[in-house]
Length: 276
Image 1 (cartoon, rainbow, N blue to C red):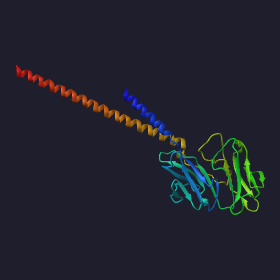
Image 2: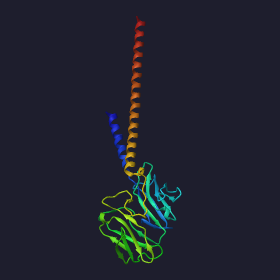
Image 3: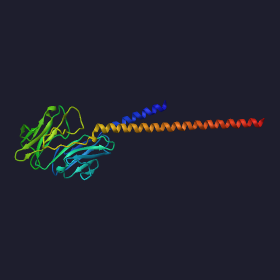
Image 4: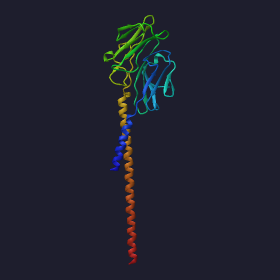
């Protein structure tokens, strides 16, 4: 009964160990679009610590690599890109040795003169979202026109537009245009009713826009489940091994005790014969 209780306790501990905090990927500056040549810092942050997390990316070329492997420089828990270029455009995420990954960030690097600063992560329903249309060399408060899915939404004299109390109908491809300077790339804005780690959808953007998909093997739920199952199996096997060793030792001690009792009986028998 005691051995069964120990087994159940260790099983529960192994399950609880599967609920470790995932890392959060943060980007500085916080924008889904970045000018060519800018400095960008990406960090894997966790509530307890950031140790054990690796920053990875999947670019337009289709290569999945980690920070320091031909791009970026590791500084503590951050990956710094001192001079970002258009080929750095892609999906970025944090991945641990156990497999689970963080939220994903889709970055677009442009060599043009205009970008649209929009949220790098999905936004919650009911929140207010501000979009900023800016140029690389001039003030960021120039008059700008904002578009959603190719249609003009409104023109703003200050260069920024706020969408109040966003809903699912506000999802789509957004871009902006500053007269005399040019047009920004398009960025997809996702609206969700809960926090999510999935990247922006890639099936909706029209032809000509950039789309990047992650390999199916990097699915967060699958990796998390496999990690937990593997941990539980290892713990159960170790416990069974310990119980087996204890049982063998117990049987060995019983055998030694029986042998000792038999020896005493034989000695006593010979002693009686000698007295006769």
